[in-house]
Image (cartoon, rainbow, N blue to C red):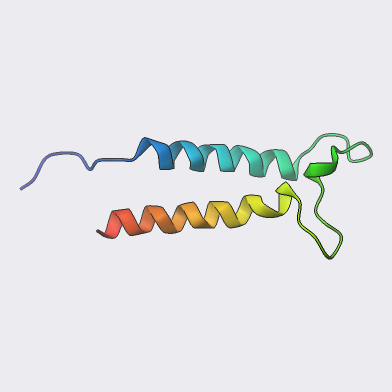
Length: 70
């Protein structure tokens, strides 16, 4: 049996942690009457940094799965 622990990529773990922190910030920006503009979702057309947080998290999950299967 192989008793060596699996290797982890610290960069993916760090980016995933930062993305989770960004998700918490986006969902709880503080006072909803005075929200910093990049923390708001776009009305219909357009894109803000808030709209990119969850897709980036899904990208990191896919990268993690690709490395874990290989």
